[in-house]
Image (cartoon, rainbow, N blue to C red; front, side, top):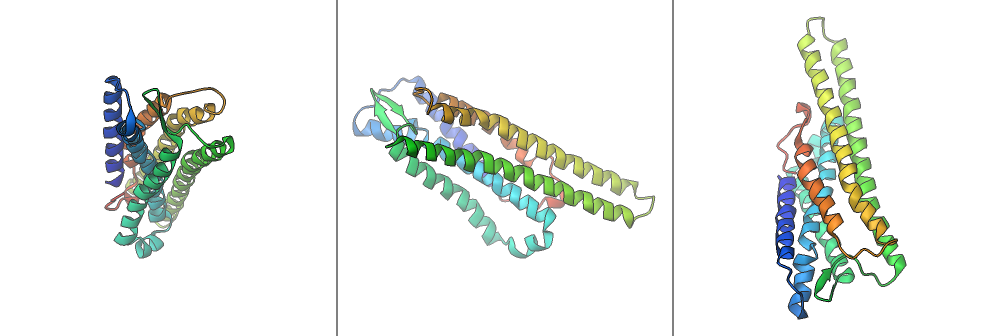
Length: 248
């Protein structure tokens, strides 16, 4: 549920931003500055996008705990913990984007340029490195590690079941193989699409320090591609043993 809300939130404001850009509005004065910060600077778009990314990692870890550590999961993953995790996805994204947009955005000749201006080059390098590591490398590592461990755990469970069952358990073995196939599909599709669809954004951030790029169209396009192509897959091909009433 939370993942869907974040995706809808970001997609809605992404649509609003592009509609307003087609109107070619010239930004001036205090009103123009705040329109730049709130709307044209894509603040809400990136709140939804980064929050969705953070929440995707939370969903993956939650599934990992349910399958690999079911006893620990049932004992500690209470509704309060789940709601705190959901809230943390929003808060982390809001705090990060709020801190960034006020310090790195400005109105130049009536046009809004966001997430571009830094006091020093070293600050830009640190900020870019942090973003790439936090929202690309680490998230991708979490996806691969968790789904791989889920697959290993399911295969171990299948071997144990096969050892304690007779030759007439072909239905159970077929179901076990189907679950493993679903996990493999999830791991490959989510991880590969995440890596591919986020790569244009990361390349864009690196190119900001090499070439004189003065817009965020490429980054927004990459975020849009990621949102509409991979968000539905986060809930697809899920093994039944890990399915609970997911609020994430």
